[in-house]
Length: 293
Image (cartoon, rainbow, N blue to C red):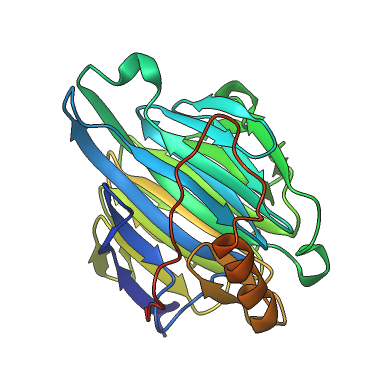
């Protein structure tokens, strides 16, 4: 019996002036462990007059994880944080009861040709932490655990698994692992994974039980034991998951909560502009109409 329960194809979505490939949520699988939302940004070749400009927008009830392969994003938030995100580093912003942030091409790159490519991820907070104070952490690339095994290189971007622990301050048991191959390699993670688990193929291919899967697909496991599979040469995959929460999460726009009433309050607070402000930012993004995934 195959351990692959569901195959999700990347779907185009618009985040303002930028197209992304949406991976989660999906109508048949809205979350994987605490992971509630994943966008694949790019790869985009931006001309000297094209820039990423995601104006100030709010979040509640989640942590955001931004991880770039190429390019650079200037992150500003209502805590007063102003940090440039570069490839390999991790931005981890916990919204809790409410935070506002903007994401833009840094000033020094706005008049030159550039690339932008990465992942933007939302991780739901446990119910008891949904109203925690907002917080921000930036972890440099050299501080992310990395190791090699045969012709495979591993990075533990977030969480704790395989005998390693990332310094990213997560709020529930989870893992987000990058694996890169230079030659074809068999992988067997045995019983090391836990909770719900999924595998995203960024480039290259994997073979599982005689079936070949290519880029821009997420494979959802029936259980966390991703059976033995083979990575093709020059392949990059991400394995992510963790303990699922007992309560369903409601997602509207940038808000995640266990409570419909809390979502409604966040909508009113944003419309009334009572969320905290991002220093130096004046743009206001109106609430979108309800969207069905």
